Image (cartoon, rainbow, N blue to C red; front, side, top):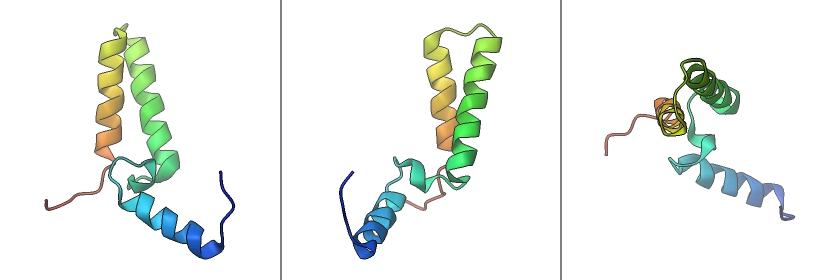
Length: 71
């Protein structure tokens, strides 16, 4: 964490929101993203999946919330 003005914080927020790898870019919002990831983990554990399959489920849940792009 760093100290910054409101302008600096807003600029950083908008830059991070444009980064598709950032949780801030998720169209479901942070709460929706964490609920989707938690559901993917619960489903994997419930089905007895190995860790690689659970990680794949997590990646799919994260990718489902990415905004659509044309490029």
